[in-house]
Length: 195
Image 1 (cartoon, one colour):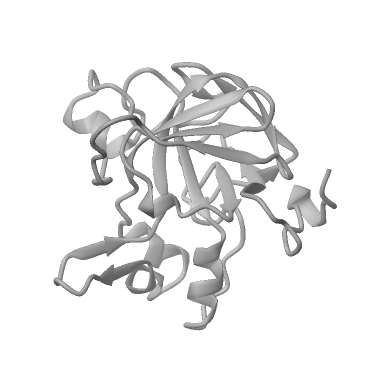
Image 2 (cartoon, rainbow, N blue to C red; image 1 turned 180 degrees about the vertical axis):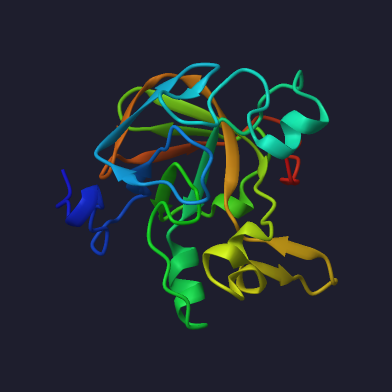
């Protein structure tokens, strides 16, 4: 078990394997989510008590377009390395403040292919469905942060750094300090696209 600091955030400075830094949830639709001691993932549903859980889309803009579409955004995962990156640009961001449910360290989330499985803790497993598409709400949290969360690849393509979205394959309790094991899909791998 790793030492846990304030508000259920784990210290991963000496971590030698991918792990969960913090978990967050909120029963209402707000940009940031408070850090909690643990979250319960429910297969095919999402995080118990989170506003974005459900079998069909729960994000308000997507509900307005077509509420019957499947929810490919049940769980939002974000790499804590992004906090380090934006800190260099003068922004201070902590776990949960970008709206993520699971903050990780030691995993190249953005480099995963579509369909990668993330085994979290003893029981839970999520399947990565795509990239989070950062939106203007990020600037509402901290002006100018959106520009720091979007980049340009050498070929000019937009780089979305706001984490990945996933669906729950196997339920279980997840908390700070849990390890994360990546299982890549067999066969041809499809790069992540916004969902």
